[in-house]
Image (cartoon, rainbow, N blue to C red):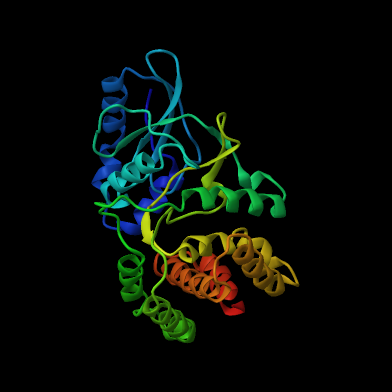
Length: 296
């Protein structure tokens, strides 16, 4: 079958490689090779799929359903593999491949069209938070994962070139990052890009996390992305600001995370995402994110 990448993936990768992407151009051949090498039977490409990888629903030679995930180097597939191996299925999807192939992950099949986002909002937050808690473990002693300080340092550099119209929010976000990093806190292996759509229904566990971009640091950083889930609904609500602040309090208490640190990382991550959306030409997304950040 043809392995044409979904348009969502093409657009997203184009944002980070505006001059062209050799990985995308080679993807159909790469997918064919990965399928043949593993003697897989292809069912379908997952559409619309994610923004950083091609996901193919397959069956292994013995008929077991699985997922073949092909990831470009800049999305750190080997870091994802290492995190999934360390979690060993506790709270996250399992690796099922006995050998390592660069940029290709063979994973257990979950229910790709059923995420925790399909639940009512309060229940979705509860289930997502419970899943996230299971992932917060001590990192391997010899790990090579990026740290929160390193990742946010790169992001902070990019934010400093933002336009003057968002200057006040950028300054506030950069200041809060500095104060958060100045204090010593716990260091755990984090999902890195956790949100409701990253939690899928499974067979051996009701909900399991997928698609980590792992990082090592404090738990409040990981939880911060969950705070702004369904941001479009929050912005559309007349009491959105109050709901957002209550969400910070509720999530902090339920996962025993310092509320002010969670608020700070939520501010930084929302502003960083908003500035990035502006930079790559997604002004509507940027508007939502920056308005949300202003509430904090």
